Image 1: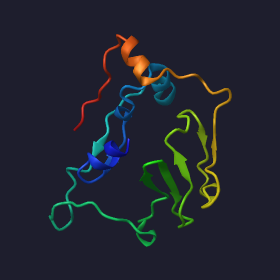
Image 2: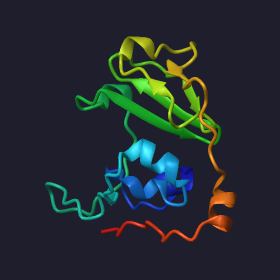
Image 3: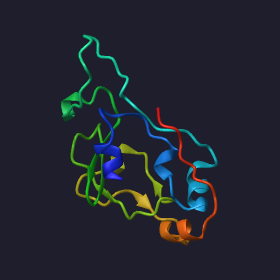
Image 4: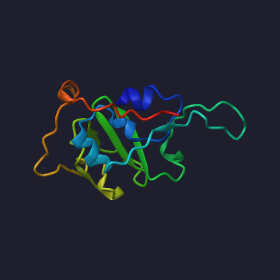
Length: 146
């Protein structure tokens, strides 16, 4: 996931689409998307005001430009930072169940506290990607990238 989200994009993302779920088991994909499919699009065609080539940038707390959330990818998970708090956020592990409920209240994303994530009960059993690939004859759902 880190490689896809950070390393393979030239500058950044405009939209993260359902192509991130390629090779996910069909029941999980349907539960997360409701059947709506759309591709990711990067900022590769972004034009800067002065005409210079666009570059990646590092954003500091003072430069959030009115954004409500910041995200930092780590090998063990994604750190979610509520911009209104301007502190390090809690880490949501990559192994967090994808159907978990997540609070959208910035006040609940307190540094040093567990992330406000509620795992569904009971946790639905998901087919692993390897099992889904070996036993599935369903066509690939790769979205066209622009």
